[in-house]
Amino acid sequence: MGQGFLYRRQVKFLQAILDNLHCGRLTLTLPDGSQQVFSGAIAGPVTDLHIHTESALRRLLHDGKMGFCEAFMDGQASSQSLPQLIELAVLHDKYLEESLKTNIFRQAGLRLFHVLRRNSKLGSAKNIAHHYDIGNSFYEAWLDPTMTYSSAVFDSDSDDLTTAQYNKYKRLADLADIQPGDKVLEIGCGWGGFATFVSEQIGAHVTGITISEAQLAYAKSRLADAGLDDRVDLKLMDYRDLQGRFDKIVSIEMFEAVGQAYWPTYFATVARMLRSGGRAVIQSITIDHGAFQSYCDQPDFIQRYIFPGGMLPSMPMLETPLARAGLELVTERGYAPHYARTLYEWRSRFLAAWPTLAGEKFDNRFRLMWELYLAYCEGGFRAGMIDVKQMLLMHKTT
Image 1 (spheres, rainbow, N blue to C red):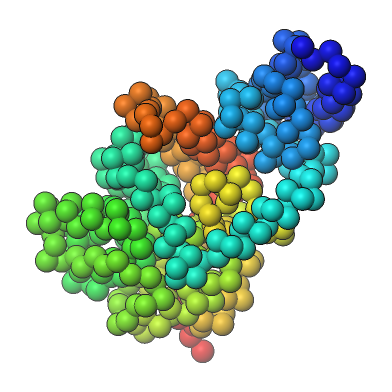
Image 2 (cartoon, rainbow, N blue to C red; image 1 turned 30 degrees about the horizontal axis):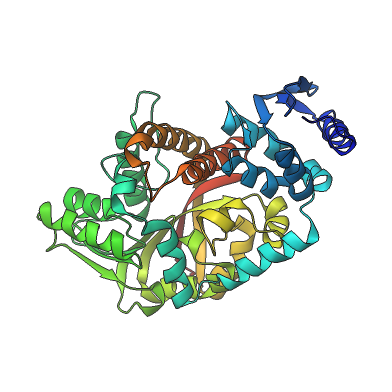
């Protein structure tokens, strides 16, 4: 196996690329069992990559990052330190993009897929269902008891995931200055964790919207069981159909699903729904501005397999739609290390729960896809390519 002329040329090409690592250390295992260690001049992630088949090698060289991701999902490539492998790749992102280009036909196919999953009202419902309506029991198996699917905030190393999620809720409520009796709108209420916290701990009245039928059913049952359904009104509704005015607005990691074409509409809706003097707090994952154009030009693994239609903003890209909506960014703070730890916790819990999840609905390719997804994001946060921001918005004052 692996002794053909083409295979040897492919190996040499990959070795030449890896010889130019500027940081970190990678142990590469090839399909023929041979190993080689590549080290950069400065410290960085220490990781490994095992290419099990010649097919995986071809996919990596012909389709770059997407080729690796698909080979991993098919069990043709693996790593014992997957988040660190992703981190190392992200730290060499520009170099690897130039060296391991996705072929033009595949690029065109990925762009077309992304365009076809644009977030119109119908498209948004389809895209959200793809990820969130695969079953509440799936998420219950590995999320913490708050059923919170967004970055936690670890105030100390001893915080467990549940404590850290409550820390996050409190920071958002404090930033929004939510008071007893306030009318609060939550855009993207998920399984009802934040609505439960704000209504129970602060005494605010919450209107929450989601376009996931599975999430809505779970959240309504949860709030009824807690005796809070008189303080919380949850609706199956697209944000574009909202009416009314609210003292405070909170949206936790829903903005990533809006889509760039609809950012002006989203912020115009926030501005219209927010009372004068009110506060809106958005928690959103963001991408480094220097990588934004490349990210737009070539949809990635997450957009293809995990969140169709998704689009991360860079902070400078939000300036124009915010200004046009009459909103200003008052303050923002990043929590990238907290998200990296959250993702580590989720991946550990997911893998521990897998024996109870495996079956006809969730096969091994699904497991590998989700393991890669969680590690892919963790590595991105560790490398600083992506961040998660808590942003306070208010109406502009003249």
